[in-house]
Length: 321
Image (tube, rainbow, N blue to C red; front, side, top):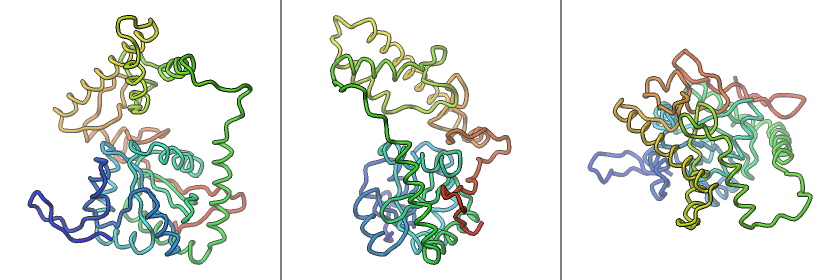
């Protein structure tokens, strides 16, 4: 449970939760929320099973603008945190630290809502099967969803079970790769092919990979750095030299964009423009930089979560909306 404490800097911190023991910058940003956050792990799963509570999983990252908006509007508010603590076991995940968790449940949100993004908000059974999800929720809608899902959990458990089982089945089918036609050998040729495919969508004009909005692909960048570090410097192959050029161009562009954004009093990890320039915090509002597959809106607010569609063919799990 979140406990009263004092910040080491001298300013009063009304609460400190389990995230204070983590090392992720994003999780540490939430250590003084009144929400009784757990990190992803067996302790939270055991509590959910023992208390027969569904899990609320919130996934984001440290430079996600709307992640901070939802924190300020919901997770820092005592009344909202109280509802969360009473009804659910709450887990906070840094997508940059646990991309596996992010990828799995992002796919679930995309199946349910036909879009995805961060902050990602997913509700799970105690055995970690998703049954409802979305992205950013404004406070009134979030409170309505919390109450509705708790009601469904206690009074319509069969609907929740049906939704979670059918959604899990969909995810398994989507995640099950076809068997290889021949054995795979993890040799130098395999690694070279993997690296070449990873940089195939390099954007030569402005750097980075893919089209705008560009998200930094942390795992790809780490892969390229590790790959290049293993190459003999005096006899670097032509392919490795081209990969080094693409990587350095991308990193230089990211550094320049971050510098320009800092001087403009804003910061974001994504780039809504092809050049990779990051918007200020004001322009973040109109370009929805934390979305995956969403269309930018001119209203100055992100697209809030649509009513998730249940994978069940007969009905949609209602949450009081």
